[in-house]
Length: 376
Image 1 (cartoon, one colour):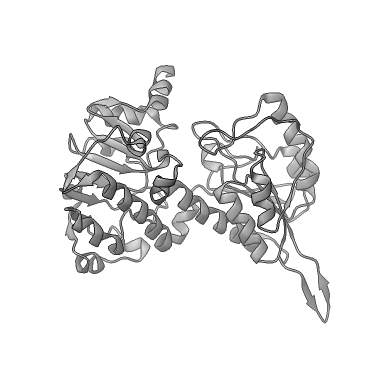
Image 2 (tube, helix red, strand yellow):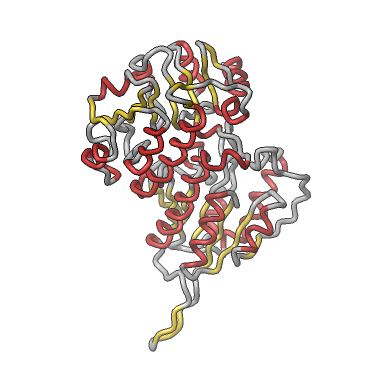
């Protein structure tokens, strides 16, 4: 069985789906790895490194013809017809955001496994690409905020006087948010964290940050997958109003709140931005799904009322080497789980496979994606 590694072509994408260090285990499992020439160059892995690890360097066309193709970014619609019928595609696919492309993938006869749909269970942790990339994004968001802020993060005492530490507020205490909190703390800032999930309170405090207390009467806001549920409209509006004083006192705000398959919840209104200090920075990690700030523009820096709002959509690509290494480990684990003695096994009795499989045998098989397609 052959597994093909494509060279990513999405704008700004520097990662690669498999790195040389992950190939030995795949070969032991009966996989012959084909790598498009130059696929790992942007991430710091040259063709020679892949050759030394047992891969074959081939053309783009040969990769598309592999039994399994692994990617980072979703395959564009114009490239879907290059996949071989009955092949397997593994990678990020945005199935809940772009269900039409999943229908096209099914029509092509491809079995598609979406890495962002891997269930959050203990046995699947080694395949949790979403969490691995979210952690990198949370780390990099804080560095971006610190770099743009015209002030120090830590307390600094000099002969000329003492500079007070910056205040950083992180909205959303999932994987990205908790990494942002930890990073801001390491840089010496005063850090606050907020999340509507009660379970997040202790996680925020365990990192040495303070928890933002809002006078919101909420039930359990965590779903079975560990994600936050959407607030009702009235509660959501109340939440944004109550957050204004906290944001007004912040030098940097990192927003990370996202709900799979939905637009990002609004947390930072124009009113809140206008209440913030001149020179303050917002880094909105939900920019790709609409943004947590009403003024966010994807992949742009917007300045409003002397506050800069950044909307990066792919921060992990800025750390392409380590991002590729971590992502490749999850993809290799997925391949290792369902390629047995050189043959791919579609095991719908396995909750990891059934949870992440979007298309198979010419049909869209994931219930949530099917439901979305019925509404189009």
